Length: 145
Image 1 (cartoon, rainbow, N blue to C red):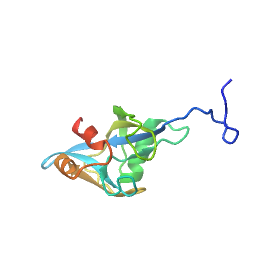
Image 2 (image 1 turned 90 degrees about the vertical axis):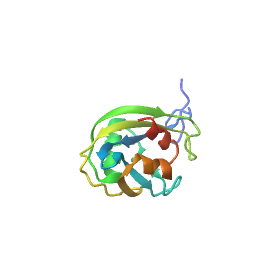
Image 3 (image 1 turned 30 degrees about the vertical axis):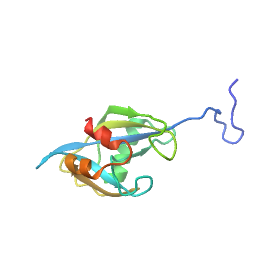
C-alpha cells in the first residue's frame, strides 16, 4: 500500500514540477529571429526567455505550451513538436523543474504583446539573445535549435 499525505491525499514521493516552453522562429531581415519574453519575475527577472510556464494539474503539456504562449505573448500557436526536455534538478533555483521545450508554429507576421508574468515580448535576433544572455538553460536550448 502506498503512503498518502493526510492533508492532500497525494503519495509521499517527492516530485519535480512540470513546465513547458515554446520555441517559435521566423526569418527576419537580418537572419533568424525567435519569439522571446523578458521575464517579469524572479528568478532571472529582466532576462530573455522562451515563453512558458507550469503545466496545470489535469492539463496536457501540448495544451499548456499553447496556453502559455498566448498568455505571455498574445500570439496563438499550433502544432507543437517536442524539441528537447531539460530536467537537471539544479536548473532552476526555485525547485526541481522539468521543462519540455516545444517547437510551435505561429504566424510570422504576429506582433507580440507581453502579458501574464512576461514584462515584454518581441521577435529577437539570435545574436541579440546570445549577446544579452537568457534565463537559466534557455541560451543552451536556443543555440541547439
